[in-house]
Length: 283
Image (tube, rainbow, N blue to C red; front, side, top):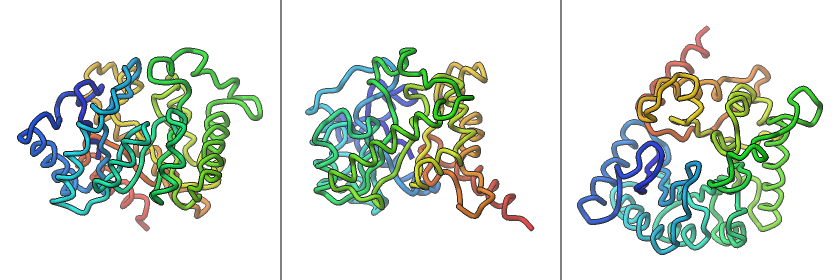
């Protein structure tokens, strides 16, 4: 379940905050509601990384996320992931009660991130992205070569770059069993790139040594381009389709292509996945 404590996230910016105790309580109640609806993890972020987003000062990011993490931990033991690119925020969040570090830069934004996570011994989600939120949608970052040529295309390119990050994480002291990877839907990808990664989820996981995958297509811009829906909050129907594309069971007994779905509308996605899985398991 996504809980953005930001004024400018693309879908729910300004909905939740930690500006005062009343707003902290509202934010915490939203997290607890997502847990009741079936969320297995609450992902808390204090910096928007939407295309074109400005960096947030370290002190401001800490001010946004820490009160919420501490308050949730008083009410629930649900696993919390901290969505941050900054090692100091990651460390403070884990000390406040978070359990997982989720870094959209895969540890490239902050040179201390990998060693910081290693020192804490917690799981880390490493997302694939080229550039930064301001530059990631430039054509130079969304070009992965010819999909029809061996070793080229978005699946091959993302797999290669993700595995490079996994190797760096392992060198820093984060073992493979604490690594989760995310192909970065909507980050340095064009429309066809996003669709290819969703369609090729099983192939991508094989290319990454069957590491656990997190997918986060929720309400992203590619859904709007396909459907014509400009309001991100109205893209949950398209999000369901994107999510189900990633959780289909492989035919070789290797299990699902995706282990974790990061979504805004937990209730809708949980219901969709439960029904889909029941259909697939029917005799």
